[in-house]
Image (cartoon, rainbow, N blue to C red; front, side, top):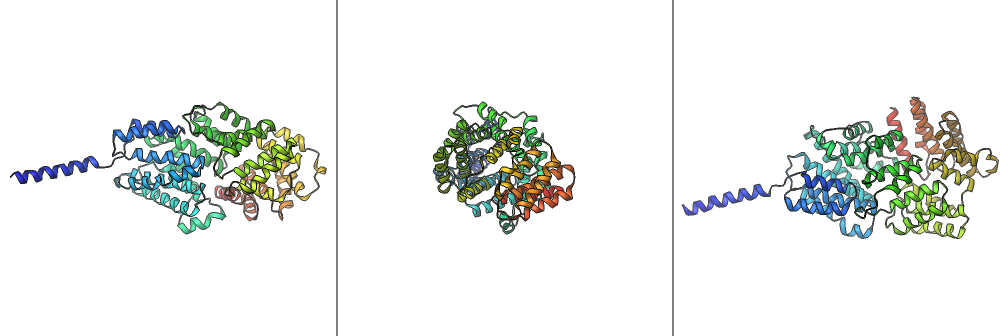
Length: 494
C-alpha cells in the first residue's frame, strides 16, 4: 500500500508540475505597462518592467514577446553592427521559447508571426534579403492560418492587413522574391483590415493601438497616397508627440515628406528629451533636412554632420552626405562640399532610392544649378511662393538638356503644390516628353504626379495611363519606390 501510495503521490506531483509549467499568454498590468513603454521607445524602463513580469510568472510568454520588441527597435532604428552581433541571435531563442506555447490559442501564431516580421525587417536593414524574404513568408503564413482558424480573433488584423497591402504592391525589382515564396496580396483587402483595426474599439485594437497608430498613417501616406488623411489621423487621434517618440518619429517623418518642414521642426524640438528614450541620430537628420529646406544653411550643416558621424548604419547616409554637400555648396564652401561628396563613395549603402540617387549624382562630378537646387529645397520644405519667385521668368538661364528638364519639372511641382492642377499637368507632360530618353527620374516622377492628380479628379482611366507610363520608364534612381507607388495607384483606380 505504501508503494502504491508513493506512486499516486508521484503521479499527482507530475501532473501538478505539468499544470504549473504550462505556458500562458497573460497581458497583465505589468506587461501592458512594458508594452506601452517599449512602443514609446523608452527601452530601459521597458526592459526593467519585462524582467519584473518574468519574475511574476516565469511561464508567461508575453514578456518573451516583449523582449523581441526591444531587440527590434534597437536594431532597426540604430543599425549598429555591434548591436547586431550581440542581439540578432536573440530572435531565434525567442522563437524557440514561443514554440513551447499552446497551439490552440490564437496568440501562438500571433506571437511567432510578430517576431518573424521583426526579424525580417532587421534582416532587410542589414542586407540579408533572402533571409528576410523567408521570414516575411513565415509571418504571412502564420497570420493567414490564424485568420482561418480563429476568425473572431482580431489581434493580428494589423500585421496581416499590412502584409497583404505591401505584398500586393511589391515593385518590379522585388517581385521575383514574392513569386518565389508564393505570397499573394491585395492592397484593398489589406488596407480595409488595417483601417478597421486602427479605428476599432475591441480589446485587441485598444491594446495594440500604439502600433496601429504608427503603421496605419504610413500605409495611408505611401500606399493609399492619402497624405492629408494620414496627417489628419495623427491629429484626430491626438497622439502624444512629446512623450511617445515612436509617434513623434512617425509624425515628423510624414510631415517632412508632405512638405511641412516647419511642423517637423516643431515636433523634433519639442519632444521629451529624457535619457529614458532610445537616442536616435534620426532626429538630427530630419531636423537638418528641415533647416536645409528653409535654406538655413548654417543651422543645417552641423546637424547633418552630426548624423553622418554618429549613425552607425547604412540607410540614408549617402543621402545625408549629399544634402551636406549641397548645404556647403550653396554656402560657397567648395572644400567642405567636395569633402562631403567624396564620402558618398566611401560610406553608406544603396538599398534606398535616395541613396542610389545621391551616388548617381556624385558620379557625374557635376554640381547642380544653384537656382534649381534652391527651388528644389524650398519646394521640398513647403516654401512654395519662395521657390516660384526664384524660378519664375528665368527659363532662358537654363541651357543644358538636364537643366531644362529639371526646370519644367520643378515648375510643375510648384504649381501642383499651389493647387493649380491644370498648369501642373501641362508642365508634367512637358517633363515626360523632354525626359523620355534621359536616365534622370524627373519624367517618371512627373508621370506619377500627373496620375495622382487625375486619380483625385476621378479620371481613373487617364490616371492609369500615366501610372503605366511611370512603370515603363527604366534606369532611373527611384525605380523601386516610384514603381510601388504607381502600382498602388493602378490598384486603387481598378
